[in-house]
Length: 230
Image (cartoon, rainbow, N blue to C red; front, side):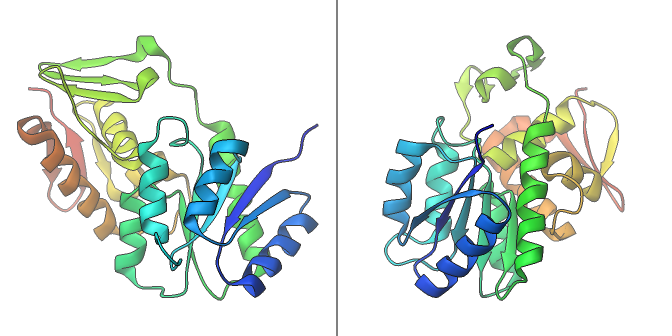
């Protein structure tokens, strides 16, 4: 059986080598890049199973690299775990909005890193394949999971991977109220390190991109959100 490939994009050699050593002990194959630009070239050539991406990189930073990965149809489904030394809520929220699958704050325990990587890979493996026939059509809004495409009045809407999953989750259950943490579990998996505020930020951004169709996402005060198709 082929080993799982993990790409580390980290400019600090000591950290990169430490992470590589511990992942190899967990029986992963590890690739390395010391800049975002080099990492993107490796991704195109190898298509890793998961990317560990440092936030503070020379040149294009981690947020920009994540944005580029999630906007590329070939790479948008590769799980990204962001590594940040800041630990600031704003950085974590921004990473999640761009579609990162997890964020881990330096310094971190090698055991915690390994557990988080395995959890993200399990979520990816257990995620159901979205079939083309699962298209959701509500008035002028069309959600096409098979194509990872959203149309409003036949015009494509550019959504991040996280925004797409959030919209699809709500639209599959019209009329049902979902709490913020139910949304987190559905979009990212259980034990995802996220705050209630980040869900609100993602919903605001999603509504803005959908314009008038964003009115279908209804806030239920004190509870969460629901998709209202009336």
